[in-house]
Length: 348
Length: 83
Image 1 (cartoon, rainbow over the protein chains, first blue to last red):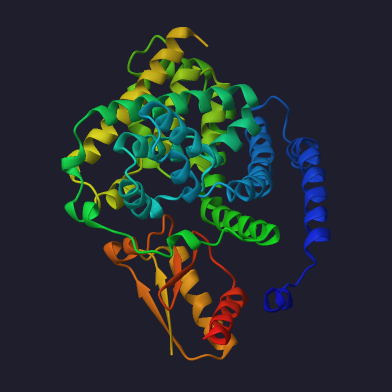
Image 2 (image 1 turned 180 degrees about the horizontal axis):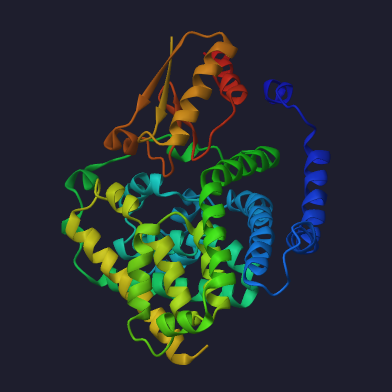
């Protein structure tokens, strides 16, 4: 079975993986001293000066974000390969509305999914008799509590912010799913979807993918992801570095602060067209948070960036009428605004 | 003559899978045609939840990942031996 595959391998798997992990650790711990050395000693910039701080931020964050993406994302994609949507569908079918909705939101964290698969997934769920609200809970949670956002939030802000973000995202997905499930939305599904009857053979899918293949898949998909977002990451860190070094704290506090009731809606409106650039946006968010932007406004901004995706709406238009997409989007936006206002009001 | 279908709306990964399938046909040295299926209702009938999907002679062999050309060639020849 593996003869053809093994002949094509260039490097032995285990030593390569071990060496990569070691190199990653060394780079991770060398990053801060190296960044400071490059900014303050090599370039001779003054500590505490606007330019010096901005350049040090840039030198620190570019390798840090890349390391997080390359290393942690590979590990996370590997683990996620054990939770395919087929497994989720089997776990959810036939359960009560509330447990199924909570389950679908939780699966959103671990199930590998990209918006290009939204249509087959939606059809497969409808066909299995899974209620629409449950499917929507997954469609909200999957991009919102996505691994790029969580990994970067954890790496840059620590577990507290990452877990708060995850909890808030799950809450939006569960409440949103329950609300959507109560509305009579079936009539706004495109009729052909309800007529699909999948043939047999779908159950014999490749659940026998080997550990090594999963690891290779994870590495390939991570490489692709990094290649796609690299430019945005560098631009984002550049903007973050500028904010970090030059934008006065009072300005950020004044615009994004708790006292400004429009801060949350404004950042959500800004965030909508920035979709799919979670990796590029988080460094900007990092700088803003450092300048005193409240957590509620920050979380709402992050959520709106990843959860409200115009390209995904275009894809979903194939299976649902525009009205249904509008209702779906409104519920998600309402949830995000609630999270923003709530966290700001609580003063966390 | 084998019939290989690449299921997917035309995303980047679907294109990669199509390339891998074409390479696999050459590696396996079997006679096969590689067809792209981009039409959603047709894709849905195969019951896959993730694209891209790969179908050999009407049977789904993978979905949601891009198997290597070597693996696909293996499946092509394995099918051949069984037939």
